[in-house]
Amino acid sequence: AGVAGGLLAMSNETANYNIFSTTVSAQVVLHTFVGGSTVFFGPIIGASVLTLFTFVASGATEAWMLYQGILFVLVMLFAPRGIGGVVHDHVVQRHELPWRRLAGPYAAAAAGGTLVTLAAVFVIQSLETVLSRDYAAALRRTGEYEAYAQFGLEWDPFSPVTWVFPLLLFVPGVFVLRRAFARISQLWSAEPDDDAGAEGAGGGLAKGERT
Image (cartoon, rainbow, N blue to C red; front, top):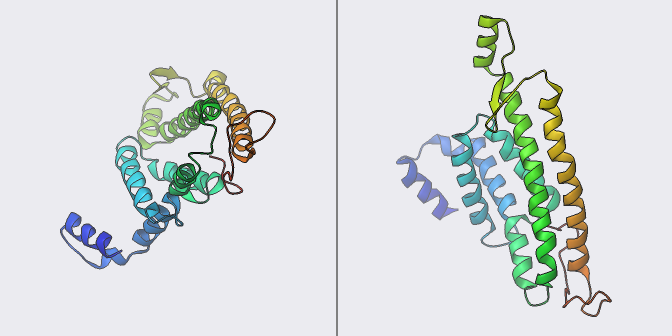
């Protein structure tokens, strides 16, 4: 905490009453839980990841705080020990895990997560555009709901295709994720002498940590 406070003062070139605000405290808690409160370097990981995420996302969208909140909720739901906890479990079990058999489910989980993320980003950014002040001004000026750009294409806000498209990404993504998580959980909890021939997966993740 002392090092972090010193670096913050150097970064801001000042130290005033703002560092005692609830916003700063909330950010510290957020960084700690996302990074992992049970791992020594967890808060450092969380601070690094979320600071980089904020820097990139805040320059791309005004809804960056919503994305940050979604990220926090997902970590709490699927990796309660945070990013550092997940990394720690993999390091501890590195000699027992069947890495060759886990490669496929991990790749499938990444693909499913990508589909779900694209669907969520499309919906959030579409709503941000349609509900923005600039769009409202254009609506008052022309009297028509104009098409907006998203993913390099033009989308009509009242076209069914516009809102069916994210469903075509979201539903398969969730299906793939569920199948991948089930397989990953099975491989993590498998015994060294299981009938499937796993090359040892002793220990496994703690209950609720399947990512």
